Length: 315
Figure 1 (tube, rainbow, N blue to C red):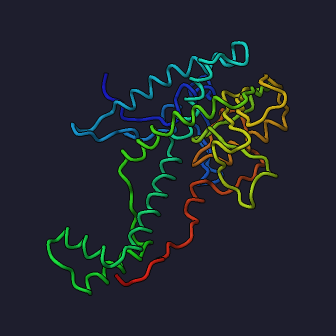
Figure 2 (cartoon, rainbow, N blue to C red; figure 1 turned 90 degrees about the vertical axis):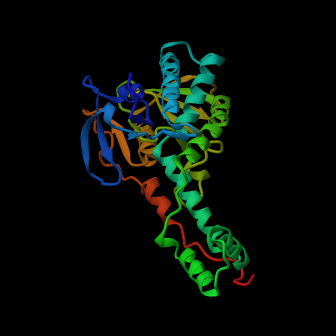
Figure 3 (tube, one colour; figure 1 turned 90 degrees about the horizontal axis):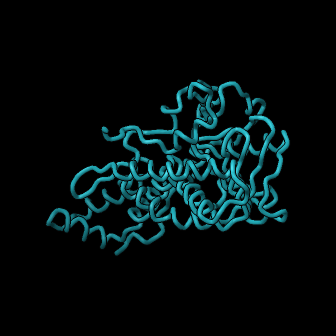
């Protein structure tokens, strides 16, 4: 077998639960409101070499193969969650909890968020370096002492933060994902689980299908992605008729409960609102009709204020 080139950050087996019998889903672009099209599952929620790692012996695609193995084990567990008695066994719970934690971390949204934070942090360090430190870095790099004019030019260049971008190596974001997944899996497993079941196919998914949802009265004044460990519910649509709810509190216990059309619309809103760039649903459905969504998570990453210098200019 040839090495995989197209790496899916939302598994194909999962997306097929929202597809027609030709393995197609309708794609709704969030960054281009109103643009929709039908696309094969194999061509959505994927990027070339998204999980490629650089190692001492060259490029490695072993992580993509490992993720495929995790998906195979998770597929049986997720299908059993609906077909078998509920609540699930401890083993099934552990497998699905790990899958949900991984799915929260593995997509383009989390990678861009990590890269954005790394960029902001690096720029904050660059513009707040004392001149003494800048002189040392210059001397180490060039083998000579800088002039005062050269130091001033460096400070001016670093301070123009809108003119450059600091992007960490892909290895860094992947390593972060691998470090955090087990802990998030344990958080998901420890919550109270419920299945929300609908009589008709009505649910959607997205390129960021795991949603941390908090009741409106528990939010602050801004609409933002809630924390995985602090939200009221972790929501994950399983297919067009079933959704997994991982709640901080569930007075009714771990049960399968019937959902109403109003609940389906509210659930779909939370999934669509927290999508990163695209929503996916069955081509014959119109679940977003008349729905007004908030700005995308991607656009909200760009709303940070200016990065400011906070230390004196002297040595």
